[in-house]
Length: 425
Image (tube, rainbow, N blue to C red; front, side, top):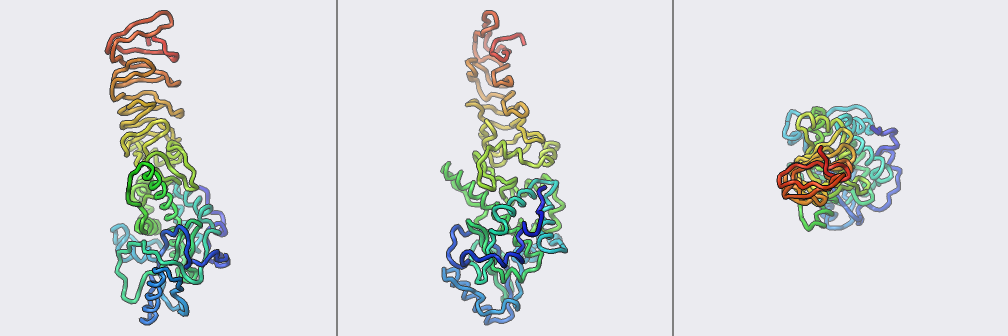
């Protein structure tokens, strides 16, 4: 794992207070997205009503500091992700509780990132995010608050003297956060807020990829991260005792199927994927990044790894989304269990030479002509150079031999050498 080497490489907000505010967070910011919330409780009803009125104006586009003239040190501030978990239980498990960790923000966050180590490579992806797109200089402190965004789908009833207030918003540049509210959080909650924003960054990559591909294919789908629900559940689970009980396979499936992040630094979709830096690559490259132990565990139990979103794998286009593929511990494609198209031929399943991606054998869906040979449906084999090796004829055909020719009948099996000449096996 590429570790977080120093406190200055992480988002240590105690240091961030010296970063100049690039632009007022309550002003218009392009590409506003999900932001973390805090639950704030008030001792004074008058103060509560004043802040509530200012928040309403803030939502209407008025640049209002909701805490102007208010002593924030007298307020009870908690990260909403953790508050919601305590009130509803973690993943429906009331007995599952948040971890208790000592240390500063850096040490706590590093501890939580390491729960993925040796099970998936997601710890490395989180590290890439925090050292790149959401590095220290991408976080801008605000002393006048941030824009309120109604994206949380909260689903939790709060005491009458409490409300939710935006502590951070993520935009195309980075994250703007309210440094006053941040200072009121304990170190566990500060680390939770940072992880929340890191996860949402990967959620945005996932949604942007899905949207772009659906627009191209004229399909529509609801975004997985239109609100904060999945991100909150992710953050809470990572900070719960439950996370360490997951096997590598359970963790990988949870990240891909439930949280729907750009796991392994990618957002798999119909025909390709985009990594966390926006670079488009082949899907075969994507699966080569799957942590090897996940692959081995899956092979031992099910033989095949499920390809949930992608429809193209190397040279083969998967016809049915959700196809199962077999890859080795190096990420090399070994087989496809369901229907796919390879060089304009439709197969119901197929196996590949290890490493080079060429089709070694496959089951043809129907009779067709391959390299001028009328081949019947069923199993056909290919040499390593891609030339036809063995199959059965769908009609009478005359083959060239090294010396002369030979005609075989419909249904006869044939064997060809690597240059295409008929052989005796």
